[in-house]
Amino acid sequence: RTLPARTLPARTLPARTRRLGHGNEENLDLPAPIEALRGERITAMAAGAHHSLALSEGGVAYSWGYGGRGRLGHGDLVNRVYPVRIDALVEVRLVAVIAGYHHSLAISEGGGLFAWGNGVGGRLGLGDERARLVPERVEGLSHVRVVAAAAGEGHGIAVTDNGDAYGWGSDAGGWGSDSGSDGGSDAEEPSAALPPQGQLTPRLYEGFRCACGPSSGRDSAALNSAAIDAT
Image: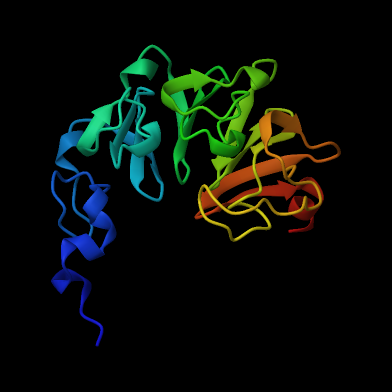
């Protein structure tokens, strides 16, 4: 039989990676204030598969949860049971945070995009597949102003202020594929999507003017302007 969520052992439920930010592994079936963020005015949140991000009104980012593959951005692989400020970004005023499956993104007030975490398949857009334990600016987008971004399981998408969309990463575990997070073969290239070998730096989607929505599980959302106009 199926037991109510509150009676299940913590190890069987997502709280085991401390992603709730309450300093323990307890599962909650009702919202509860995150005491470590009390006093901060939080304007945005993002939830990945095993970690969480928060953004304060002052543009400061916090992360907590599972620290594997550097997704928390604190320079190590340590789990955090409470929200901790990402010190590597403290001098940058942020306007958005995005949580992927094994990596994270952030957008600065000036339109810069920062990435950190697992780099397999080029999902960070930094030109290689190395993990980053602290945020690093995506130089492949330094010539444009990023206003929105989304992170899937193995890829990323960014939208600029003039409506151009850029994509990078691998189709393995992303669009067109149900393979594992870091394994399995790449899917064949779908239309206007990602190359099967992995796109290590952002690539412009020619002919698209887009709006970008948040990721959901393995996928990210980018909408053609024609579809937007039709709604």
